[in-house]
Image (tube, rainbow, N blue to C red; front, side):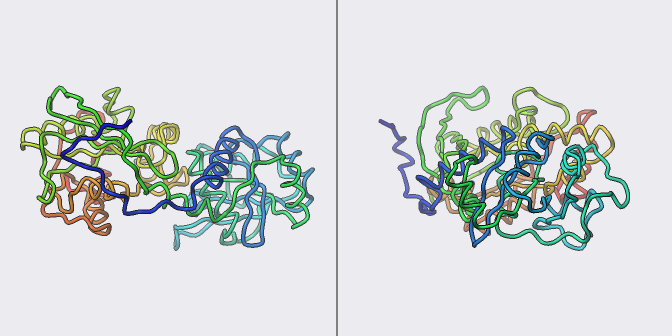
Length: 384
């Protein structure tokens, strides 16, 4: 039985359960697991089907396995940002993904380099087709699946004829998943259910409670930290904080996340109460492993924005719809937002949360994060 705090009764979710439940959700979970193990998965839909393998795992053995399924030409599918970083696409459009034809006997190492952020292909690399095509359908879903798996967003795909796809499904050699289910996964991630609540006294806020919200896709829970007794119906002081293992737990000096987390808890307690939403969005949405890869690039001279884009991600992959849904379920329609990031203000407003005031949340540099803070101000528009 789940015990609920009577001050904040359960409100029915605004976002209804999506098709990403039951068998569809299980199929995606199986595909994510297979992809992270370096195995091909079968994506189908819209009359098309492909086998997809994360490019970072390509080797001669799994290349041979794919070629035994079909003699059709292999293709590489990359986010457009990764293609731009490799010099394979123009900068005039940076969204979406592109599909690139590959020569029949292209070595596995060259294909891995399409994902490897430290690799350079050089000018006019051999074995790659002409102008990339726009990735659609199963190809686009393959890149989305790699992102959901927290892998580098570059995949090797093998287009299948209908008879080949049917045979692959009958033999059950590859985890199958519907393209539409993959592309609708983000909507399922925003559908939240309150699953647990407990009193948790904190060092800087002894009157604190934690409420866990589970996403509709069964992913990692987001947490609402309620400090004091914020009154629903009145503008409440709120901080959106994306989890940061290195900053929050290890007190890393590369960022200001730890300072912002502890400072927000103290500021909310001093103000008499409010809410900190602790969001499962490590590394601005790219995951811990990819964040560490970005750190390697930063040590090589890239700033935090360029490092993400070199990996193939947007500078910020976060989505704030879950935060708005958490506030709505808790009964708060307007907030005083503790942030330096104008995008958080704009995002909450887009999702129906009124912003009565933006409250600055600035901390001094520490000798290690000056460049990081400067980049946030000059390139990401943070008000520091």
